[in-house]
Image (cartoon, rainbow, N blue to C red; front, side, top):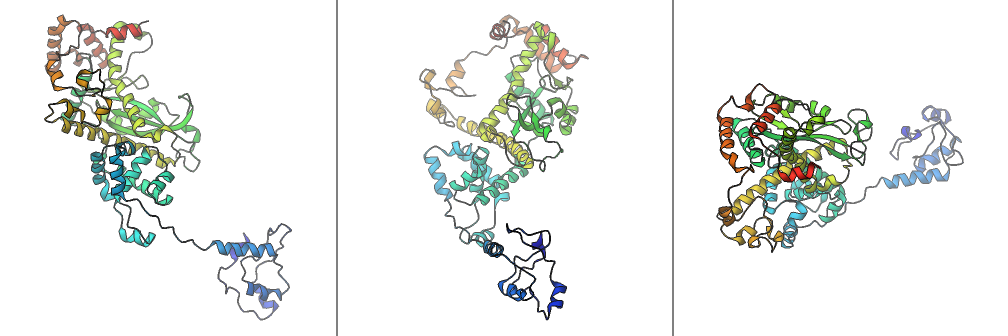
Length: 504
């Protein structure tokens, strides 16, 4: 452009003696058309008025009025507006109001106790300099870590940055900046990292927790995790954001709405916590191919002890460490259908984990419309917050149950009173994972097998399973065939309710 050569200072014009000396330093001259646009050669726009008068004597330049007006307006736009001073929200008052109206958990997606724990974990990464903030704003200290965490949690809950800027009375660029700070802090926090079980104690605990969920009478002993894939829907990435060079790779036709997205591979434990969660591939990639890209996960599965395995659907390769259901004509064999039932009884936990993730963090209810890098970070942060909320809820529930003796004390757990049902015993209502102490004492022992006459046989089989390494589960058969033999030996069957619903 012809503006590139023009100096910006008002005294740019050197002293000239005559026409020949002026011609040595002046740029090529071009014409200005009727529409005010310059031709291919250069012309003068930003020239000061005094300099223009000096050049008129040469008879070389003709500057239209509209071009001079444009130059004047450009100079006017360069002046920076003074910053608006925002009257920020007082965090203590804001928090007190939310707690008083019972809205704190609804907005921040966790209890006040859990929120305070999270703030302390992230405080070193979120503390900013008051001196820098005062020099920048001229009136305020730095935004506190409590406000940053609240903004970050509400952003993960689906609120846009511009709305959060209005709620907390900060500028929109500041809201975007603190959201990025929150995401980076959560992703870098060592205490929030996801860890695959590796020690003997961790693996044994995982096997016991999964076995407690199964009605298969030990048929799936050794199960330590459920694996599946999930599509995190995003807007179509721009060419500048696409890491693989092909935007079509992010389009998934698997779902009915045909969206772009990211393929996520995850494993959960018996309590719906993610022990592995990664953005493995673009959305068009199937679970089988995406699974092969997870080198860390593949190595962990290879190194598992022989008695441990995980379960997945038929998209994953069958092995002794990864059991998948029978498919095709095999599904009509009664014993194989029974195995599929017991396996699906545990595999459904990963679907429940994904459902809880997207329900808690409502940002996934719509397409992620940020850069590819930020979309990936949002997914990783959501998995860590997901685990954190479950862990903190478990701690709070255990604390509430200590010394519990009365119905009124049970109702104080995590807002359970709002679910009370007058038709329930003692008006307890819905108490997930907890029962009244009197009910526990009166309840008869649960039977996993309908035929009570087989109790002795099953107890003996379980003893052999736990103590004898020559048990059917450790034969030279493949893992799935060994489980099938175990089911056949004990004559295990699906519940009548499942049979009546699925056999028609």
